[in-house]
Length: 267
Image (spheres, rainbow, N blue to C red):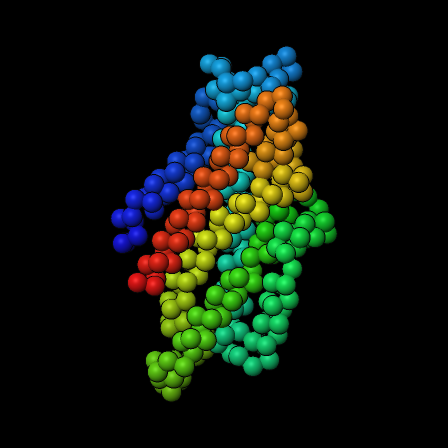
């Protein structure tokens, strides 16, 4: 693919790939127990034994960062996947069939987008309760309307094409037309939207966990680590740097990939 030749995309994919590899191999890497602390060594700076220092409970920050990578990536990927499946199906059906169903979906989507996304996510977590699975659901909830709009717009733009009319004339069934002609034509914009949404999903997860509404202890995510570190900013400011840097790098990489894919579509 052309976009893979771009240095920014290649570097971004490499960084994300290394993070994913570290997350997968975390159980077999020579890391300290991320849950075992030593209060006698709390808030220590980087050392040979603890390369990134220790947190308030004396737990190894590097180990917790790597294990938190698993949570942050899984939550972001899971939320985008759920939002993509739900939003793409609803948007595709609304755009293809039109009529009252399209009007209803469009009205609900506009109502969705009238509220700040993070407030919607907080409301969902308030109703469902905290936890990793509920966090995935809350983040997916706020991204569904974006996928609906992208899918619907792509279908409406192609609904009147000659090959769609020809398929109807020869007696092709609606499921066959959607599978054979509609899905391939909306795949590209949906994938671009997914790449862009991944970065924002990770940022949303970090925000919710920072507020104490997302992933709950003893599990750790970069957002929850950042929230814990903010309480010790004057005693050990380095604690905020590591999770904050990880979040910024991942979001930046996802955005670079998404922007490159969008530019490639426009070319």
